[in-house]
Length: 89
Image 1 (cartoon, rainbow, N blue to C red):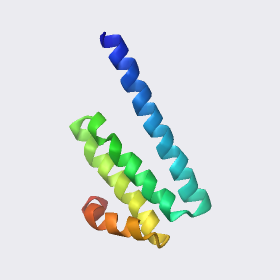
Image 2 (image 1 turned 60 degrees about the horizontal axis):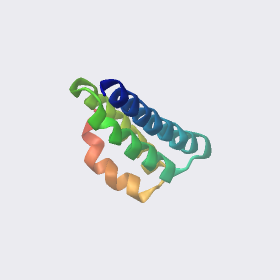
Image 3 (image 1 turned 135 degrees about the vertical axis):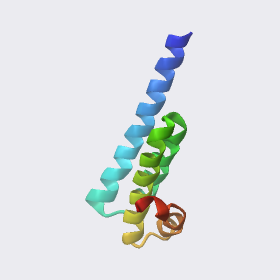
């Protein structure tokens, strides 16, 4: 049973990480603010699956994606950045 749970968790994390890569590519290469926003949301969704020590890094990464989206004039990214701004410092 533990093995099956581990395998399912591994595929879930990989799937989510793959989606982050998809959106990050769209954000960087195509200068798509909405994609930056979605990359930030996907990154943040990983927070429940990582150790407490890694949560700050997840929040910092999410904040960087929201900042990138805001720099590209994406309104939702700018709104979310206000919440995550403290993690950029």
